[in-house]
Amino acid sequence: MNEITPASEILPVRVAPFASLSDEDLAALRRAVAVLEKPGLASRLSAAAGAPLDMIGRSLPAPVTDVVARSAEGAMRAALRVALATLPHKAVTPTGSEIEKVGEETGNRLSRLFQSSDSKHRAMAALSGAVGGAFGLATLAVELPVSTTLMLRSIAEIAREEGEDLSDPENALACVEVFALGGKSGADTALSESGYFAVRAALAKTMAEAAKYAAHRSVLDSSAPALIRFASQIAARFGIVVSQKVAAQAVPVLGAVGGAAVNTAFMNHFQAMARAHFTVRRLERRYGAEPVREAYAAEKEALGLA
Image 1 (spheres, rainbow, N blue to C red):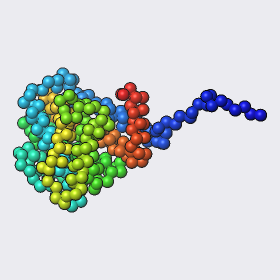
Image 2: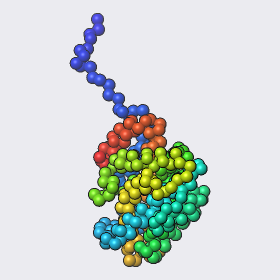
Image 3: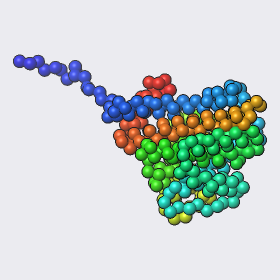
Image 4: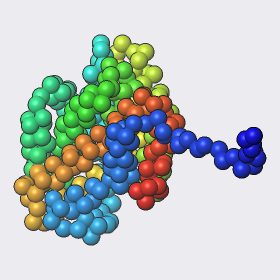
């Protein structure tokens, strides 16, 4: 006669919440966690500038930070315009401010670059950085929308590779969302949370409002409150990494060649962020949001980034 094991001695079988992820997808998620939770832009820019970024960019003068903030806002308006221009039967009307006009005109001229080759947009990004390196802060309001639009084109390609349908407004706006994931936050930004999912959560409401507006308008006005709020939230965080870029390009001996290297490092950084971001979104579509989030948290802890 077989003995019956007491219930108190029976150990429950614990199934990991992310057991459904394949080994390949877990490896992809691990790479994404490493990129998203430890961006490493400062080291990239320091290498390009040939100087420690924490020394040259610790405290930019107030007038410089004002220019950076306005330029980041203009760049995000331009990026938003280009992203929404990819939607079927959509058009964006002009608005009033001077910086936004620059961003919109840049977006109009460069939206066709979504059809250009990788080598072409990389070369043009380097060229825009060379201009910034040679002429400094005075060109930032023009150079930044150009380089940002080129980066957006590359981000959109990565999104498509990871299975995103960019005819959906929310997916198109997820390309712009990448610019908010580029670096750690500061206490004085609209997105003071750190961590990938914290930033996504902070953006979720305004992104949903912007997507809803875009989905239900045959003509899009980029001065619409829903779009302005979304662009402003992204710009608040994007401005932090732009400040690092400006600091790197401000190295006295840098010049045009170094400026091109800084812009290339800047683009490579956001390409890596985009690949990681859209990897997570791809896995969420495959496995569901909650299992991926739990697996992400486990990988983050395993990497010592929690």
